[in-house]
Length: 522
Image (cartoon, rainbow, N blue to C red; front, side, top):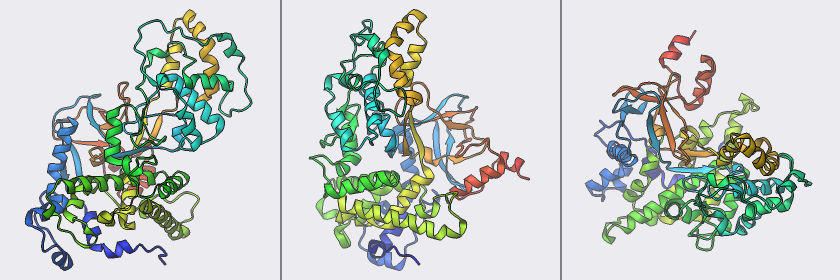
C-alpha cells in the first residue's frame, strides 16, 4: 500500500500531466486535450496554447541551443526507434571535437568538496596551488565535510591576496624560509599520508608558504557568493552573477538570500548531504524554473497573466520548464537500480522507502523556497521525475586537478632543480598520500549530450582534453563520422560481455540492438 500522499499531485493533476508529457516527434501536429483541459484552458489564446505545449517548438529549441553552443556540425532529429538523436551535419575525423555542451544544472559531490575548491558554476579550480593543498590537508585532518561550519571558518580567514593570479615572470624561488624543516615534519593526526605540522598547513592556506614553481600553475581568484554565504565560491564575477540569477539566489544561506526560510533551507541541505546529493540537483532545477518563471512574468504586460488557481500562469510556467521538459524522465523510485544486497522479493518495500526519502526531501525544499504561483513544481510527481532525469540522463562531472599537474611538473624537472624543489614538495606530497591527484567530481545534466543515444560500438565518447578545465561536457570522435550519421556514445563499459551489458542497460529501460550486440548474442 502506498503510504505517501502529496495533495499537490491531486490538485494540479492536469497541469502536472501537461508538464511531464514528453515532446513527441517534430511531425506531430495535433494537440489532444482531455475534456477537463479544454474546460480549464478555454480562455487561453491560440498563440499561448502553442507556447504551452513544449513539443511544438522542440526542433526550434534544439536548433537554437546548437547555435548558442557554436556546434554547427550537429543536428538534433527525431527517429522512430529511439526518439531524439544527435546527427552529424558535417564530417568529423577521429579525435575531432564533436560537442562542448554547457550543463543545465550540475553539482559537485558533497564529499569531493573536501578535496577540491572549485567554481560553483563552471567548476573550474580556483585559488592557488597552495590553497588547494593546504585546505585539503586541513579538512582531512579535521575529518569534516566541506560545507560544515568548520570549512566556512577555514575559508573565511584566507587572505584575499593569496587568491590572486600572480602574473610575475620571475623565477619562482619563494620557498619556505627554512626548507630543511619540511623534511622533519611531524604531527599527530592524518589518515591520508605522512602528516605535516599544523603551522605548515596553515601557512599554505594563508600564502605565507609559496611552493616552488607553483606560479607556473596560476588559478583564477576566489570570488565570494553575492548572497554572502560561505558555501559557494566562483572563478569570476560573471560566474557568480550567472549562478545567482539562474539557481543560487533561492538556495543561498547568506544574508541576501531570496529563500523564504533559511532555517528550512539549512535542514534541506543537511538532509541532502546526509542521504543523497542528487536532491541538490533537483533543487537547482526547481529553483531554475521558479526564477525563470518570475523573469518571464515580469517581462509580460500585466493584462496577459491570465491565471488559474494559485495565480499560476500556465503558459509561462511551461515556457520556464521547457529546458527540463526536453530530458527523458521517469520517477526516481521506479528507475533506480535495485542494490545487490536487496532481495527481489523486497523490491516493492525498497522502492517505497526511496519514494518516502524523496518526499521528505521535497517537504524540506518546499518549506525553504515555496512559490505559490509555481506550486505544481512542488508535487512529488514532478520532483520524482526531475530526480529520475538525473538518474538516467546524467553525465559524470569531471575536471582534472591542477595539483596533479603541479607534482608531475616537479617530477619532470631536470635532476638538480628537481632535487632542490623536492626538499619542499616531497613532504607535502607525502602528506597528501595517494589522494593528491583527486579531480573535481560531480553529476550534471547536459541538454545536447543527453540526446545522444547509446551504442556498444560508439563513434564518440565523453573525453576531457588537456585544455578542458571546466565542467562542460566534451564529446570527441572515436573514429570518422560522416555527415548524416548518428553520433552515439556508450552509457556503460562497452568492453563487458554482451549479457552483462544488456543487464546494465536494462536500468535505462531498453535492450541494445546495435550491430555489436546482434553479432555477440547467443
